[in-house]
Length: 78
Image (cartoon, rainbow, N blue to C red; front, side, top):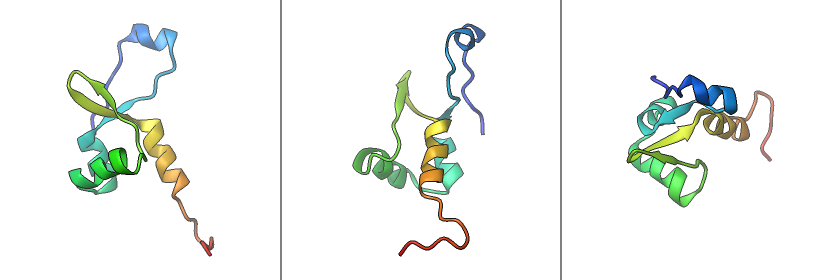
């Protein structure tokens, strides 16, 4: 998985989260393009950031999605 690298000048001014491409997110979760579209458009689970005609996702948002939906061993949902 190749993450987008920001120029060093941006790192001095802001604490930016690494970005993931749509392909990276699909591979990370093992989902299809249509599922990713549903998660972003219909369900609003992930926010996209368009850059140069491509859509990217903050790695922090992807990690938060995992954490918010994680059910640990011994945890009951009822």
